[in-house]
Image 1 (cartoon, rainbow, N blue to C red):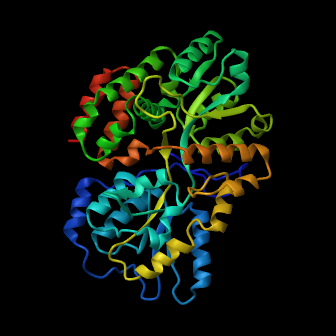
Image 2 (image 1 turned 60 degrees about the vertical axis):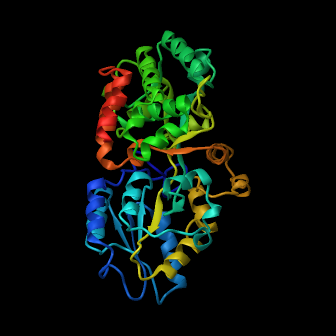
Image 3 (image 1 turned 90 degrees about the horizontal axis):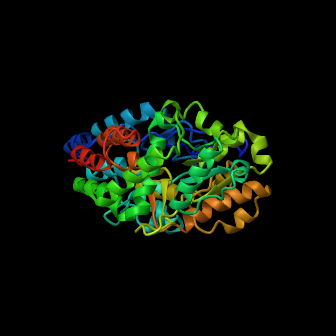
Length: 441
């Protein structure tokens, strides 16, 4: 999955891979069957309870600030590792012992809880949700109602490139898919891997399919799929997107060894900054990874970045983006401390000091009106990067959540498996949609 910087500075942020909450539809049904009555043993009569992940350092600072101002009704914060958290949250909701506030990735996993009647609606006036970036809020909005407040930075997927490698090959950063195909041909002729890809990890390959579908058919195609329409996987745009992915692979865009490269070891990142690969499609957390692994590469100004190429004649806007809009905090519908919870969400989440902390970590928080704060960033290279990410999201008509997080978790494994098979050309472009429609039925 995708990582979001949560602490530190641009030179040495801690990076984590976000793992989608594994709450299946079947589990959601069992949650609904449990009902919402009965005591919540994690709830305190004196204050809120809140669960989050143990690497959310900046989020924890907001809890400390709240507790300082509310000494008689403090938030009791429990932090978990990714895998522990997923299971414990599901069990806690099933037993009516869930916390007042809980951390999630939005998308299908959060919607499972919403459909089970476990999450309270957050009205705009109660939490000032209008101050957040509109495209980000889509991941926590279901049937026109908001069920989560974003709590950390933006992580869209972008195209990175090695300026020197492109220049040496006489290639400009591709603005269109046709430009990309032409660049692949030229770069191959120079003996350079055009696109670094950790295909062994599967989810990096999915990023290409997400963008290719959005550029081909527009955001409505996956929106239909995410809404539960399994037949939408057979939309012609899905087949066309898979054909384009296979065309890239067949053209040698990813070199000969992509399936042996894993992301976690940093191999695909290294291919870019060592000049063995010209470009890489990856989330914005990659900037921090490069800053840590190869600071001189950044200092010399050799890293470039741009939006994923447009598709001539495609139905999707070239300004659409995919990736991780943010993580969210949601309110337990059975909470006995809703007023306190709303105060915390309204006044302490992504307030001025929180925004400053995220910008210092190299992460752009999903709030509107950051222009003055971005202008005040002292480092010109850091300012350029942060402004690029902010503008990319601010101007995006659609910010599509990564599919393996947007879909119910029982579809994540089939999705990654079929994406890999399509990339390896082990199935036809049409077979991908057929297989996924069966998985989603």
